[in-house]
Length: 353
Ligand code: NAD
Ligand code: UD1
Image (cartoon, rainbow, N blue to C red):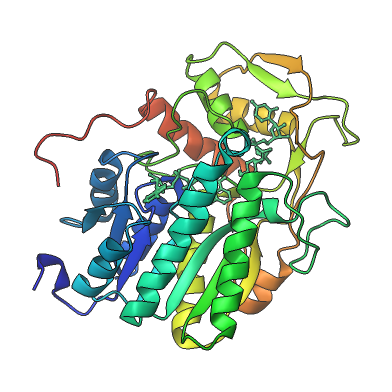
């Protein structure tokens, strides 16, 4: 018997659990008495995140399996050895520009990887999966806010891989394989744990707005390039629905419990229903950090949409969940993380769990 298998806590396999959203979800799982069993190949994360998860929650240790989800035998072994009851699946690649340059890497990690994981679940009889999808599956808005029945038309290979996995999950559920699935379409997750101990730690130059702004505030980058100020939006800059990563993490627990309680599957937006512009975010971050963010108005970024936000009402109806944290909370916590860890995670502390 493994040292992690004492007690009655339900064990949940968490592929990608060392990453940004996964690490926050592992904290929420531990806080509610679940044991996350992390599977990660650390292609975009650090072992130090595991130490921090333990530090925040007071856990002595968390099981970690260093493996690629495309290794089906390793997934079968992990599910069996730890007697997992469900899977919360974060593992994959997520950079839109990179997906256009290297589409096969994206289909391999995201689609083949998910197929491998589902095959392992089928072979071991594990019957519940929560999947990280994205608002990017909707593509150019036909109507706003996006509701879950908005047509799906992703405009880049990353979005296509999310769409493909959604289709695969729906077909698997319909086949009567004994698996139910919760597909979560995230809007724009930002922020960090309020302790500032875990947060987003992008490799190289950040692609996304909030980590870029935070790196400007801490002096790692000279200024923010604002991609377009001539959109048909109130201040001309792009509008998005930002969601605090802790709200998002909590939604995963609610979704998991819904799948454990009832046989139904579901697809649901996770957003706040509010749209904020790039300049709104910059202003809120300046206030939270007390730092000035120098701006440079630049060309629109290819592939960007002017504005979109969620209709979050189905999440409330289905899961009784809605966001509770504000843009100010997101900026405050992002700053706690960035100012406490200006270069991101340290090397794993020697001798730590
Ligand atoms: P992240 O890169 O921080 O986390 C992903 C984790 O998966 C990393 O720890 C990485 O090392 C691991 N991983 C990648 N490929 C793997 C593989 N083949 N085998 C094992 N581990 C692998 O990203 P995140 O922001 O935490 O996103 C988590 C999930 O949510 C992803 O699937 C992403 O596409 C999706 N998502 C993210 C956002 C966002 O803005 N962050 C928005 C919508 C959807
Ligand atoms: C991006 C992805 C989307 C993914 C989402 C997750 C693209 C085209 N889309 O969305 O598929 O689901 O991340 O969060 O990459 N901005 C700047 N300067 C910057 C960075 C961004 O002005 O340096 C602007 C963008 O033009 C946009 C807004 O900030 O208006 C948000 O951008 P970003 O954080 O990259 O997210 P999305 O583009 O919404």
